[in-house]
Length: 427
Ligand SMILES: Cc1cc2nc3c(=O)[nH]c(=O)nc-3n(C[C@H](O)[C@H](O)[C@H](O)COP(=O)(O)OP(=O)(O)OC[C@H]3O[C@@H](n4cnc5c(N)ncnc54)[C@H](O)[C@@H]3O)c2cc1C
Image 1 (tube, rainbow, N blue to C red):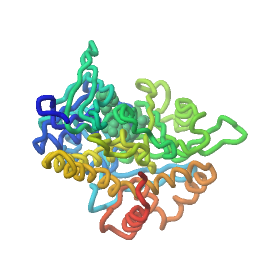
Image 2: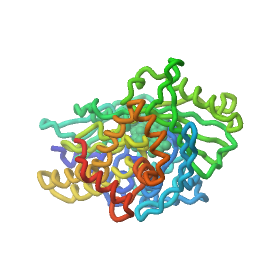
Image 3: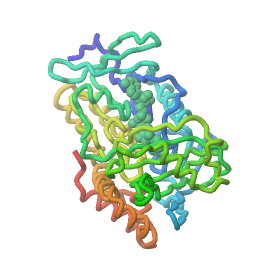
Image 4: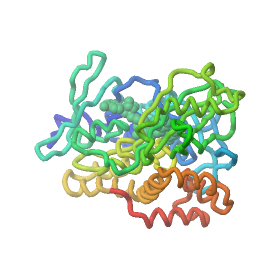
């Protein structure tokens, strides 16, 4: 057991990305003593598309963050979808649950803002502190973390009755207690780069659904993924592409070359050319569809990317990271108000249940979707016909963007919610 003398905090949060800073904010506001450990120093870059759908914006609003344009957010009114021969402009849907606008902001800024929000709420942020693994007691329960801190990488340890893994796709903390990823669940890979472009203040974010693998010119293959352009309003656009692991081409694709090849085929006046590029192409993995579970075990909760919470439908992970943070905070606050033991454990088990309830069924559908579009013929049919049937369009749009009312809503919302409920959550 962790004794009071050994305790450095009531809760240790590892990683100050969207999941970590959000949960630290909620916990600190509830009066919990939170230690937030982060390996980098803010402000720092994070490879990302920098875009949030209305689902993510709701999370910012819940946190009490001013999402107005005056506060530095670039608003999008909807999504422009482009295929080889079709362009559709779709406003974000009018919903009860989510606002009718998306936002973009570089992660350099965004993560700094969220970390400052956590500190303002009372969380103790320690930067330049890399957690190397969990400390467990004789029963295997996580009671703290080992870390290296400062420029000299001094070994330190911190103890708390609860530890929250918010360390992203590397999931070092979960791995240190043997929580492996499920190889059967889809993964994604995404790369991005910034370009100076006259399209920097386009009111729509853009999704290009046709990415072709032309490595064998005689047999070009349509890849299961999409390219994006997210305007940042400051003269630049974040451009990138993401692809699913469910296709045969996943491991053999040179993503940087694919990005170059795709952008070379876009109109010259858009400016997506080498001479307008800023910085290097950055890339990282997208852990999807709950590919790492259980989300709670023996004093350790997994949030966001550490729990494989990127949407298999669209590669969006910020909103899920923040949603999981909101749910985790609720369970942790309840748990800490109970005596250690079975009653507290019951409260903590509420977290994986709540996460499964919110996104489990939807992600299970997404895992099936990812498997299906991994087949080039299905992907081709989906882009060719799926977007041309007007009656199907709201279903495709709301389903893929995750922007639907889980309760109430119109016929389409009810259909997606019912399908998600009927599909058991992956475990
Ligand atoms: C190219 C690309 C584009 C993307 N585009 C989008 C997009 O447009 N919209 C969207 O919603 N999602 C996007 N995603 C996904 C999104 O980036 C992630 O889902 C999201 O960042 C997850 O948040 P998180 O807090 O769980 O993890 P992270 O954002 O990865 O944060 C983890 C934090 O933990 C810290 N950390 C890691 N290891 C340790 C350690 N051992 N000790 C201490 N600290 C540690 C890291 O420095 C970091 O601050 C994209 C991903 C990629 C790769």
